Length: 322
Length: 120
Picture 1 (tube, rainbow over the protein chains, first blue to last red):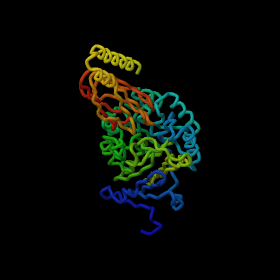
Picture 2: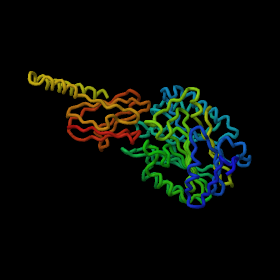
Picture 3: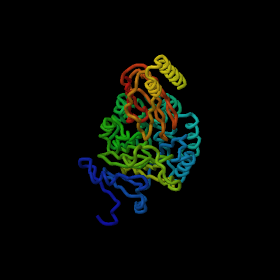
Picture 4: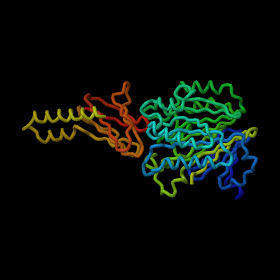
């Protein structure tokens, strides 16, 4: 592999689905950032430092949206005493994107303690974002004390069960899942039987060529079960999506960007807008990680996703708030 | 929370009462029993410490959250023997164990966090 190609990954999904070398190379840790384009089942991954080499055609998107996550409004500990300021910075970042996103996804932990005033503050700040529609799924911090009643009243209009739903935008099918309710002692995130049945039915009639974006708070892949970073029954959910050519899974919860490709599925976790958490197993616990104040915004961020119709491609780009 | 605290007070008074009743026999045992009437569990680094706590019947266990992240203390049985509200940093929850038995519990926000109280 030549020096120029060092950061590039060509991964053929038409074989058995899991290429160990590709798997490892397409994991992007906090701060590094990755841009992935999928074409006809082949995923190209570039580091952000080589973005200038990507052709304009690749960047032209029919549909562009942004994922933000883990705003933890109400958090006031040393890891970030100003979560209002960093959420505002995230909105500024969204508003500064060259193509205005059509909408935003918030993948949960909107609030820190499920307090009404915390949700109010986030709603107020997000009003200044150029994209006016925001689609939410709850994090465990949003459903404290009331089994998610308040969350459903605020954000769950038209949703099913405990807040799951789907919608279509420009040929892409979006599915919002809830995996933070009814958690069992010793276990991970859970989707539950009722939601899985709904999902099976929801995707049954989709064509192979319809790209799917699935978003949920806790990762739908086993990032680090020792810290609860995974979902017990996610394999069942993904089994229903096997027949679809391109699945992009967007999660939050772990407060760092990470990416993995497995078969037809690209998994991606977003940075938080509030505080970073340590890399798996690199600390005693997954609690908030204190970094020097001047470095904080470099480990917080937003995720920009672009879909190029006809090219079968979803491109995921992380940007820090720095 | 307030109700639990008053139960704790009652339990302490009971232990004291027993102590007075037995005066003159084993004063050192009395003071040991007083100390035993409440026990602490610290929530630190996403874990309960100690993970397994053994206490005599009548003991009030007080959990204190020392993390920068909220946690809960919820028994795993159904119906729940005890269930705290969400505990933010430095907040406490207490429960008095009046019956012998093993009481497994967990944090309902971070279910990997588990512990148990063994009441003898």
